[in-house]
Image (cartoon, rainbow, N blue to C red; front, side, top):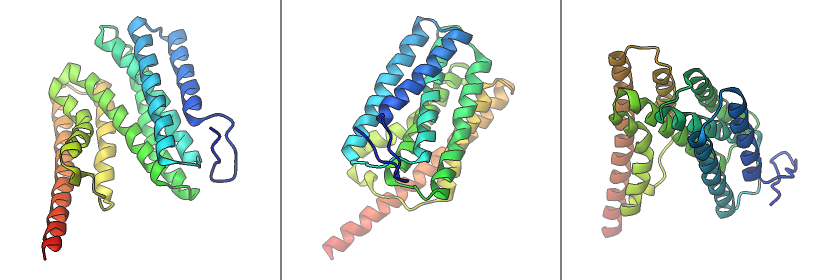
Length: 245
């Protein structure tokens, strides 16, 4: 499918195909520089198949017909996350390439601060772009939380699983799918998770200090999700009361 960009530019390749190509470049670069074992290759390939299939399906289901520069930045971020996933798999198998892993994760996390600004400055914001950005954030945080959990304790994985637990809960309680009002504090706390996990991954702090910092980040995240759940619950209660009046 050819997508028309918001500035009347035409992409000759489907974004999912472009993402797969970029990620393939990342994986091959890692293999040529630091080296990847079978588990790293398998994880990178599995990540690519899943991530870019989901993107293609998301574009199809939403009917998105445009693609802006911020979306391309998010796509690159997701491709870099595929590289991080491969390195984390290698680390969990006993072969840690820490500098490369942290560097790649830091670039992916830093780009999170770029795509939103680009979208606003080029006036190419969209519901699809916002969702794509959020999902790319969530995947990176999940992967980093699993890596950090291997050294600080498996409770750290709760940071990465929170978003997916919320989605799973919404299947049982549909009112959790309601629209939330924009809150800057929510965005700050979400960005904080990635930054804290990158620092914790770098092994710059003593274990007890890293545990405290990560625990604080998890506490803020719990508060943020809790606030949203309470708001959605109160909105549902008001709607129910209004329907009975």
